[in-house]
Image (cartoon, one colour):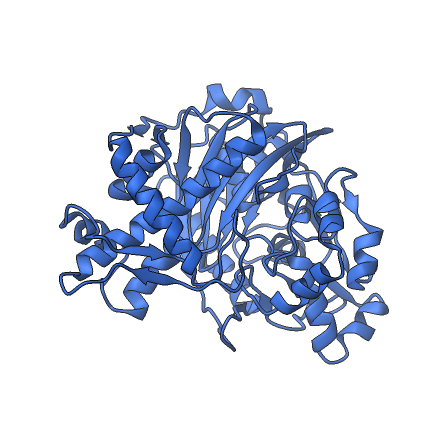
Length: 497
């Protein structure tokens, strides 16, 4: 009887569930969006129950559509893997499982003042040395402190050991196992500002600085092992191993099979995230990047350098929903291609501040170079160029930190399907862009890790087992003079954002 792996990809705007067979062929798919909550300017929240409902709905759709078109038998599901939006911070009651507040999303900027005070107190270097991260509202630690300080009774509740904290993976494992397991993996733990990436353990010193009770924290485990068994989940039999966890960007790095030091990928989702495998060495950044844990399999830990931009695909959504320039996200490529260039317009996509390598939470989106001749097509093209130019900033920092000159960049995520964007990206980076036939590398990486954790295969077997199909390559073709013009105009706009 064939066996199937279920990969849950819980993202910022929706949840995707993919079903793979033992040869990693895609056999079923489900997707459900959920509501975004914006209680104040700069605040972004999710309802944990709505997250779970989207996962449960997508799971039912994926399993029903798998197999030979008529669904698969419950007994054929061998394991469940999870990949997730990172840094998003949840708290729930340890006894009842009830969420105690909306989740505070990674994009949320409410703790900017708190981060500024920690910097003013001279603590930024200590946080960076231990965690590999910068003091920015992006990460979970200050979000958690905000909850403890501002949600009535939560601090005392937590001190009594009655509250669970977790990133989305922890919450999903808790729900999948009927509240039996409170865990996270090293990749997600490394995004919290509370985890020492060298010791691979929660830092007592950082917990003390942010006044976070240790009893709230999940147990930290590897990225490919059995954490617990499903219980009481509609559409899944009890007793299915939950066997793989990785944050979405680390899962994509794994799914793109960037297994060697120097291999790199960029995922274009709500934000855009470039990661480079640095092997078993945690490389400190001097250029505004993050040092993060890629994954841990058995006793072997793989690290990565990361550059994170907060807004990528979300900029296209803004054109659609905020301005009404396009009716659907897929319309942007044809509109942008209807003009030969942006007509001198530059867009800085800083709708949620600037991430790496600038780390300016106070920055805001900027459109410059408008004239009477500017059309919505020029604006659409400038949005795509702005997404790509952010990545050019990341590559410069990454090559400086690692000492490695990138030979090619693998890409994935929804916006990677945009040919115009990928060609411009190759042009401004000056290296080939490689897009696999399957751009959902995040869920694929979760499935791979899950299969390893469940003992279905070993990591060295994966390359021979799975063919990503014919990849498309985009090679640089823009003149150096034109590239320099774009970069110069971009630098000037970023300074003003």
